[in-house]
Image (cartoon, rainbow, N blue to C red; front, side, top):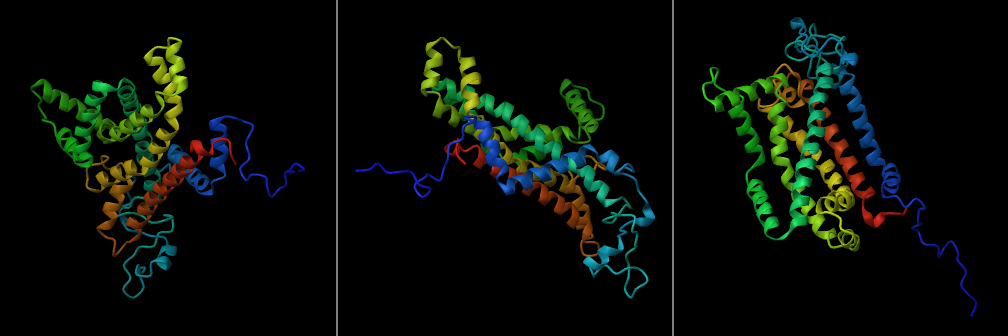
Length: 346
């Protein structure tokens, strides 16, 4: 019988790449995902906007022009017909075209404050995952590798911390440390007062970072432990033990590089929750210190007059929603790109 010849119809759909590099293959898969490319582009634009905020908006986010409170450009009156310009029947809105998307109730440029508000949200978006990765991955790696009694004790501690509501913990943390005694006497009172001063110098961001850092690593520790348990008995780990590699080298040289992909994906997908936590805290008045702008506090201020001036709440809310969608799109793309079942395929 003649040997069958390969035809386009019998050629497998999946073709092997010659690179053999996980990160190279993942990058090619990532840039072919349109949603992740859009999300990554939005994030890059937001980062540039936050870094170049003093150049883009040199007048500052706290500059007030009180006669222009609630002022809007004329184009907004066409978008929101309920906002009638002064001089028309029932008109109450001041027209000021020098504000691209209007001014708030204190006469501050709304677009400038949104630009500076990106600094707060992006700071939380990057500091939160860094703390979670460092603490949670280290803790979960040690727990999973040691196993036995040590693993049981370490994970029961995680269960106890996980059972406590994280948002309630952050609120209690801020309420306690942001109201220290003005004349500290004891060492504990002096400690509270010192932390309060640090928080003021950071514009109210210090306790947000601490709160998110203390509550975000439990999930990462569980995920890292599960990944460790799945790979620590593999052949290459046994080979490393055979040649005398120390536990620390095995954990951080051989195991960690093979599990870092799912951990990075998980943290990328968790970034929107960090951003929403900061926005909620600012919304209820426990976020950054005023007049530092935060999208959450801007939404809270705008909601008080949303029927008369809806743009003051809608535009910060749109900025928040677009940012969270961008990180979700990028996280989904990373998850697909780093899927080991797709390695070496296109």
